[in-house]
Image 1 (cartoon, helix red, strand yellow):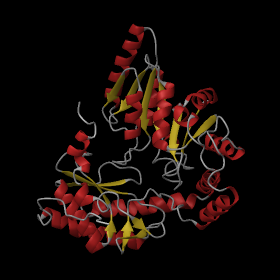
Image 2 (spheres, rainbow, N blue to C red; image 1 turned 90 degrees about the vertical axis):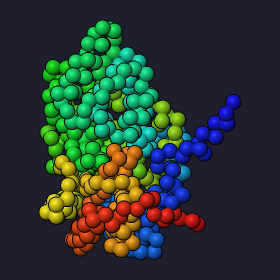
Image 3 (tube, one colour; image 1 turned 180 degrees about the vertical axis):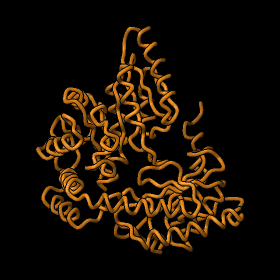
Image 4 (cartoon, rainbow, N blue to C red; image 1 turned 180 degrees about the horizontal axis):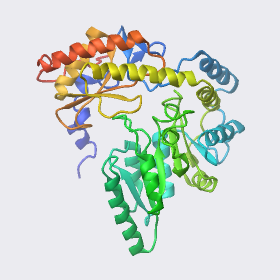
Length: 419
């Protein structure tokens, strides 16, 4: 019998194989100082494009004040225990009620983490006779939720409505044949890598022909899209057709936790059957009270969203004017597509950080196909015109070096943190 650990130390995986040269720099970097558009990395001040601080709330003085006061009053322990047993409070219920109203839904349930929450919600909702139909570019948390599903699951090509129809017809035929089960369609309001919105309105229109329920993960749309910031459903005028609306506090709210909103009867079912919440300690009181404040600011300070979009469009238009490919993004998420191997990508990234003081995260193989590089830039309301202009200059100059072959190295630069 083999030692189960033996295979792990022989193969650290496609990303882990680079850990000895990348740890602490390309992977697991340490950004220090006050959260903002410029932070310190390895002793140097950097323009940071890797924080999901869309509305700039992370270090807003009003937010900091409420966070501090709530921490001083309650500490991080209260309430103790899972909500079903001893961890509920009027503040938890108030946040759920306000989120439901904001999303025009009957009820909402708080979740400790977005990733864990949506996985567990899928597990609670779907049984072995049910079929899940999902977009091919769904986030990893959805994919892991599908792994828990004991029934059939069919994928449709990204934002391809014709292919979705094929999968709905396939699913409908199977359910009619087995005489049991239902269909859940899962997609995203905003796809976090490419920045394009899910075709929610077109999917919703299929409800007139096919019998299914629609779940939308709108982590990047909540707070950034729609007239009030209620998300992609509001932006596309189809919020009522979304049966279960999910989002996280980790993006626009600059906090932690998540929620799912929908019909009261269904949210109640989830509340009493979602294992990741039933068997987990409640969100600490300071986080809940802090999220109440964040939600209030999101609703009452539209200038934050306006500033976010002003910065996003300046960045995106500047990149396009300089000949960069930013795909089909129609949200603040700004991908920059280039060609090159992992080694070239890391050498370019190091040049950006060390010589231009621009901190931007790279996405390479195996997350995307070999030979491709994506820089994923996240503009926020906290960025300045100077941040944007300096970044455009840096990308223009380093892209010229990439095209000229300057970054062609045989292995990734050894920038590991040896401490």
